[in-house]
Image 1 (cartoon, rainbow, N blue to C red):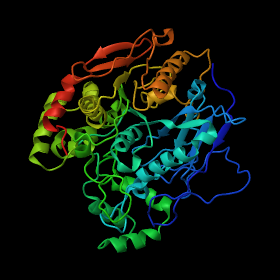
Image 2: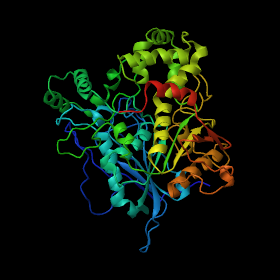
Image 3: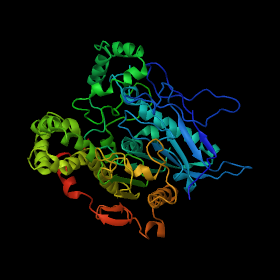
Image 4: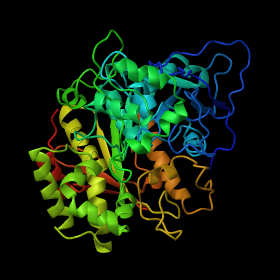
Length: 511
């Protein structure tokens, strides 16, 4: 069933701009002859760098996977999927140890997985032309432009490109739909557990953030020039390692660095205005879009608070202050205060946090940071475009998970990233499934749905036994249809609307 031989693994496509002269990426120098590109490039500097994630300043690599190359003047011209990795925009990698192609390439597509700069190295801005910001997003654009120029050599069709990602990778898809830099570079999008909404889609005060980052590195921070000159003398791993100290409370918020609105200094700008304003005005790329969530998303992150008596008491007693930090909505406003009161009553029933409230706290985390953004943007897209929107919830729990119940080998649930287990061979964490493994059927289901969408823009163009003869209905304003992805596929409607309504009430979609 599964692919055993890769015809090509290419890496080393872009170069990294060394030192703290942060600019958009530039192409590498050309070379003549054969270059060995059969191993992963190094990952970008990140706070959790270890033996599993060897890192380097020179980290802008992408991997290309294909099973058919042009031959005798004939090109396979296969559809392409470009995948942007998850990791809160501060960690993770596009390496093959997290995104092995073995499952997806059985579907005769070309797969591209890329690195991009992370945390301060990818996003730090002084709010002026000294350190502009959005470097990570421009790294992603550089990948898409490289695909347009080169993917035909790998048997891919540059006119048939699907961009996909999980978590902040999924959020990146939404931002590329909006960004003027990304126009004409892709045709379809897949956002898995997209962590983007009106609450934290952009960094609104980059100057304060830059000053704090500089202070952590013992740099003067009175002016942008002072900050930049001092940071140029710091190693990239030294800068990346300060990420945890940027956070406010117990490793919260989960995402500290995000894109910014760029002022015009004559450069190409990734975002020229609030992305939600652009989206609501309909000024975005209209494409078939698949978007969804997992059943238990961020429950394990909430459980970390539940099992720590000190943290659970702090969070409950100081909810008005800490909830906006952890759930990443506006702080210190009357609306924030009213929203915090409402959320405390709705989710926690104004009761102290105990083991019995882990489900409710998990829902609060997941709704705030994942589900509301996915729900809001997909419903808006139904109104703003005539292109199909397909929504899903991934509910299948196999033997493996990214999070386990502490002290056991029992999966915590169907948590954030768990759908990736059935799309990629994640050799760092899990075994490669064989036809004898029970997970194999889910691999076949999920890769078939994704491949159908990549080929046609429709995940179920025809009924098939592999997909339980289910036709995945488009989401519409009249029918909030979604596909329940489990051992059996089922169409359902109105995913978590009772909970989404409270978020709509306090944080409706607007710039």
